[in-house]
Length: 122
Image 1: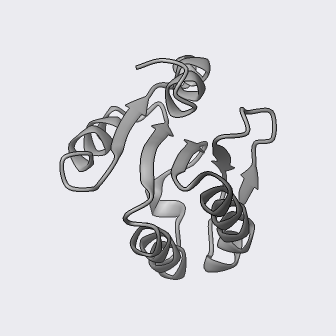
Image 2: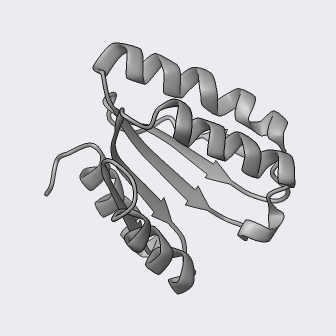
């Protein structure tokens, strides 16, 4: 399941995933992303993982890829917050392939991730 995290600055969107994530969970994500991009012209995005990538169904991965492609020129900053060192390392490397900046943060760095995504810090 994906749930929106509401108590973040208004120039970003944030979500938390837990348990099994299906394509239907992106019904929560897409409208919020579209509204932010329409309002600000860019996408500042945070995803906190309380699960494993293995918990995402094939349909969820397809929706995630669609989110990325649909907004490819709008990505500004994206953070993945997780305790998995492998996912953080992958996220940091992914930044070299995509427009915008991508960065991995550990769970105890959640507030730093919010600050970075919302452009309060460099």
